[in-house]
Image (cartoon, rainbow, N blue to C red; front, side, top):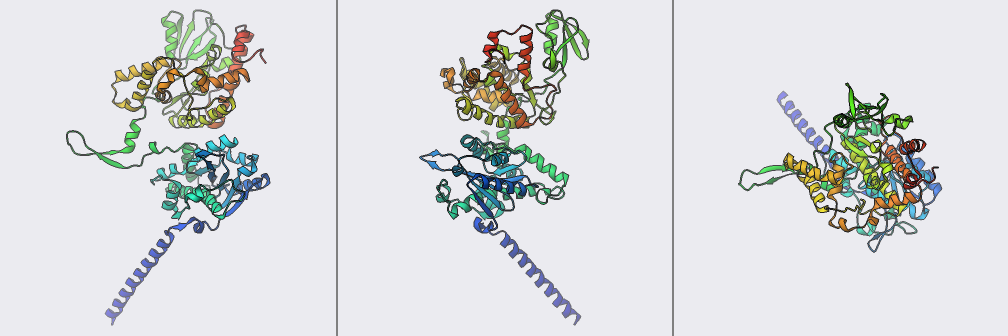
Length: 576
């Protein structure tokens, strides 16, 4: 009898185990079933906005609903007529809990200040696929800047997923199928009334972006304790992990050709040896110029004194020793290296602008403080400064700061917004998002040298590499070193550049416009203000000033070293 009971108990246990497994399988299969967006997002609350009052109300709701997670789904729609894109007609913003505002810009005829403030709020991420493209169109069509845009494909790649389009990400991560039929995608978004299908399509596109973002953030922070992003908890470890990740990829366009999936393939050599496994991303990385970042400090903080011992400025060691070698100065101290001139300089350090050049400067990124590696950043780009008169080119080191590689890339991306603004304001169009340059000699040689350094630097002998660098530095005498930015600019020179006229240059047109209207000092200030607001640097040199050149030139004017002709050359006559 006891044996029978044990047998029955064993059979019962097996049956229960099988039934439990079947239930779990059924539940998982149910959860992982592919659903249409209209079914999956049935809970959504969609508000169609056609006037400023409704806009203000929608923006208030959105701000309240994203107070913890600081992110919203973002997308735009427009009409294309005869292959020509019309202005953005619809802007979609969605919160994680399902509230979605459909802002019909074509009916409002403008972007209300409340909506502009939300778009420009860099503490709230606007997530989607290719949001930087939509941001460009928004700015071009409506003058509305988008800050802290974030392409979810960066997150997908960081979490090890394939970075496809919005529809493929939605199906792979959320098991939700989006309606991507061409009839709704290419429908009339400027119609007097949107159809139900258009409303569901537009709202789903924005909402699925924030849902994907939330899932990827949970996955990314799974190693941290808790999940503050969704719960509003204050787990500092999770919060910092999310902040660091999002800060690094915000406002950075996702480029498929530079983000090839981690897929290995085989290559054979000519000798028939064993196939070698090569990762595609390794090939991409080899195309980067490895010598762009500085390995030596930019600032040596040596001191240069007047004959009476008054401090004139700090300088690099090479410059200080040049004065000594030419017997124009004598060494008065070795640590730190200090040299005293044997002649009276043209000017002395006067006021705050003079003290700026006397301060020791740190060799670290002015934005984040990183000291690992850094690249020189021209706050006022060379494409404009090269057209400035000589009186403004003196002491240009004020506008050269150090950035780490990550901050340098981000800054260059954000600079495009400023260039686009200047292009519109000064009627100086950009070519493919980049300024058109004009060169008067040997353009083919310059371009070939830059491309060789960009794509073959690791295989070049040191002597050959230095020879190519010298070719570029002779063409760009204002540069002290070859940087990634300089290589990309030189490599982009087209064969037609040698025959283009100066009037075709974006930089020259912008400079000419400011000479006639606001003056070149104001153009400098625009770029300095842009750098401060877009990058929010925390380690700028002391006494660094937006109005630095104006203060410096006023000192020269008071000392009688600036003529009315000099003032006219910078667009100021008389000084105001």
